[in-house]
Amino acid sequence: MQTSDFIKVTSVISKEDSGGDCFVTIQKRDLERLCTEVMQLREFLPKVINRDFLDALHKSRSLDTLKEQSQQEQQQLKQECLHLHSRLDAAQSECHREKEEKLVLRQRLWESREQLQQQADFCTGLGAATCTVLWSASRREEAVRDILADGKLEPFLSVAGQTLESFVKSLDEEEKPQQNYNTSEHQFVLALAGVITNLAAVTCGRDFISSSAHVLLDTLMQLLGLMKSGVFPKLKVLMLMALYNVSLNVNGLTYISESPALLPLICTLLKDRDCEVCLQALRLLQSLFVEGDVLVQINPDLQRSLPVEQIRQLSSSRHSALRQTAQEMLEDINTLTKTRHANPENEQ
Image 1 (cartoon, rainbow, N blue to C red):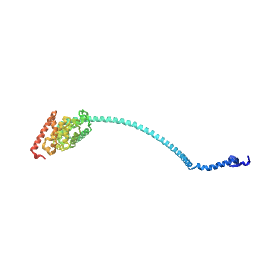
Image 2: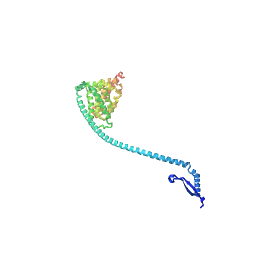
Image 3: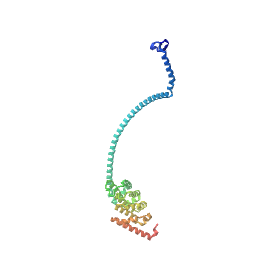
Image 4: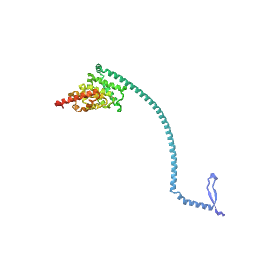
């Protein structure tokens, strides 16, 4: 091999490595090959490192950045998750505590309801006993006069009317007609209605109710219309008796006759399943009808709206008192009709 085939190449090496420059001898052929490769790289490298490669490199760097951000976000989410887990544990503990408190409160509520029911039963029983005693006492005229003299009758009648209204509106619409009405609550309202009936049976009490208890009279007529056929007939009978007693007073007769709902109410009650209810409704109608002159002055249309056919059916009833009253009512209607035909100038 000739000396020209070798070339001295100066290689710069740091002083730390050798303390100065050094020379390396390589073959010329290798240098030429290296130059060729460098030229090839210069030629082909721009084709390889193109825009797509740079974009991919940029995306790779972006992905690295995104990965780093994701790791940071993941770490942050992990911290938030730990925080939420702590809050969840606290909330579960609070929920458990509230459940225990709820159970305690529910137990107290149940005990309070039991106590309230006991108090209500006691008050109802006391009211039933008191009103029953008052019912018995009000049968005496002297007792009614004493009640009037005491000046407490008006608030009593107001409370009685409200109590009856509340009771009737709370009745189950599907109550069976043959239901046993012997509870303290039923006895209570029954005694209240009995007291009102007895008060209206005495002249002074009837005068007071006719002039100062119109709200009570309206309530009685309204409640009679709300009660279904056959339901609590004893209460219906007492309320009808009270209205009948009031109708014996001219002012009372005038007031209840002016009610447009009275005659339809009586027509409905005449079809009730209970004979006593029909009897008292017929007696009330008879009381309105018996005073022909008064009736014409109060309500001229009342005579023409009488349920004559229903009265005829009742005149054949097996109930003796109902049958007799219906027959008397038919006679009164015939008498008044003949009188009107004989004196046509009295018609309005």
